[in-house]
Image (tube, rainbow, N blue to C red; front, side):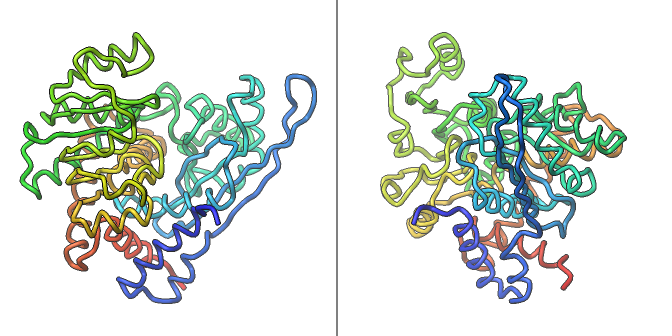
Amino acid sequence: MENNPFLNAMAQLDRAAKIMHLDKNIHSVLKQPDRVLTVSIPVRMDNGEVQVFTGYRSQYNNSLGPYKGGIRYHPNVSLDEVKALSFWMMIKCATVNIPMGGGKGGIVVDSKKLSIGELERLSRGYIQKIWYVIGSNKDVPAPDMYTTPQIMGWMRDEYEKLLGHADPGVITGKAIADGGSEGRETATAQGGMYVVKELSKKLGLVPGETKVAIQGMGNVGGFMAKILANEGYKVVAISDSKGGVYSENLDLEAVFKHKEETGSVQNLSGAQNITNAELLELPVDILVPAAMENQITIDNVNKIKAKIVVEMANGPTTPEADEVLFQRGIILVPDVLSNAGGVTVSYFEWKQNVTNEKWTEAQVFEKLEPIMVNAFNEIWETKEKYNIDLRTAAFVKAIERVASKIKI
């Protein structure tokens, strides 16, 4: 049986439900999404032929507010994946206590093979099939894997045509000119930094003496490296998809310049080349997986030497590895907390759109910090109360919030 994401999600729900003695009726309600749409999207391709694509939208639970969650374009999109991701979005929004529910969508497509015209027709075709279940007060999609601000712009335009009037808050992740939020690009990393700082206070870590290794230097990992370095943390290793570099005196500016000039971080003078697998096993204080899912597994978990893991990617640690880290006394800050800065600023974008306001980047981060700090401290208290790991504590706290609003 391959790794079924929805079964993994339900195992996490069951575990939290048991610890918190969740009412069995509410537990039953939370085992299924409120609604799942499966749609066929016919698209006229550039050669004149019509190709039919399959699309999904899962609306998991809206007890706390409108459904919220991305739309991904990927050949491996499946019903179980979309359901699991919508469940995790519900957990993530509730973890940081923003008034949004969980949703997720996707289309089974290799978007790299489409022309720009085909991509636009596909994106508009998807909205034509789901528009009646979305809206700023119902369900607010956003970008995800292989979807962009431009695609969000097409979707919003198509939705408003069908609706007959403007509704700028229907979709977040838009370009700034189209009503997107300032600070969105760095929001996930910024939120992660607030969490690292709070954890440092709890554990008495001094930034200048705290070594960090970051796997991945895309939007999240790259900004995380720069922001942590600005805060005084010692980033000693970073990687891209081809591999990484390690040095006790790593010059981050030189790393980014070298990457820009050569297309890779490797072969940087004064640094040692390492693989992505080796980066995970470095003797650092904080390990930040910010690339792909399933990086820390039962096969390598006993080689992890970091004292702390801060998940900035979605799902970088498998459930089996989670348990081993907990037994080994390694603190893991889960993705539903540490990378929730992104969805929080998506919520801010929605809020600015529906109230017709425009915030500066400084205002955005000023509002983001207390949300991340409060969420971290509440989850830390929940961990202490039940003597559980931080991921389970986040699930317990999130499910408490959702359960308190479910009417049966």
